[in-house]
Length: 284
Image (cartoon, rainbow, N blue to C red; front, side, top):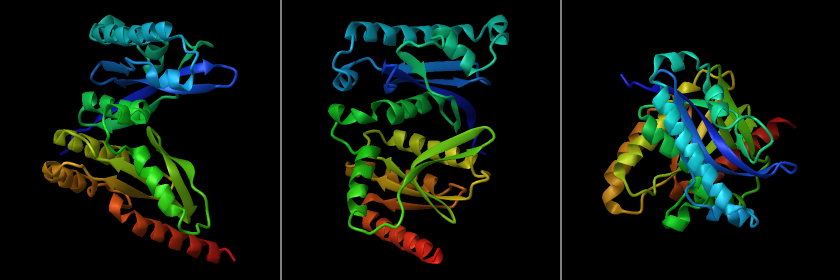
């Protein structure tokens, strides 16, 4: 039996101007109450942030990132003392012990939850999805989820779509996933790009298990939905066996779902067009 761990997480945002509310994600904190474990991963560079906000105080920013990382390391060590742990009520409490809720430039996102087989690997995946995906191509020329969607959007432009995509939060009592590209046609249809253009085959399984866990967790949602996974394969031929194992894991997802390789994007776009046209005609 697959043994998933429940966890909560929050994204650290750098809010450059509290009046406009503009922000950039700069870190992630993950917490597992059962394991008495918390960990953070924050940016150790500021190039991405200063590119968005040119007048960034880079020295102060670096100090804050180091401070947050260090404080959560200390918090994790303290969780193993029974007295201190008994005082902990929630992740919210731990977050505000490190960075109190105020009008400063560092703000926490609303808390989300999930399931994982490997909490350390989960932190890395969350950091990649919420923080580093915008600048990952600086480090290596590989396909990201944003690249997949950008190219798929160009494919969609060749079709006449009757409806527009919107974000949709699918939730249950203790978990949720927000899909950025969704539309409703009787049920919610949610498109999720997933990149396996990575360098480590072991990482493939972690990523696939993460989606298996997340989607398993929300299968009893009151919202009826279907997920379309648009998957980018690895560039290296030697990683194909690990990639096919990852696809096998994704096929175990217990909710209505379809998997399309990125080269099948036109097929998916055509399927979306047909569904939207059918829905539009049924309304007349």
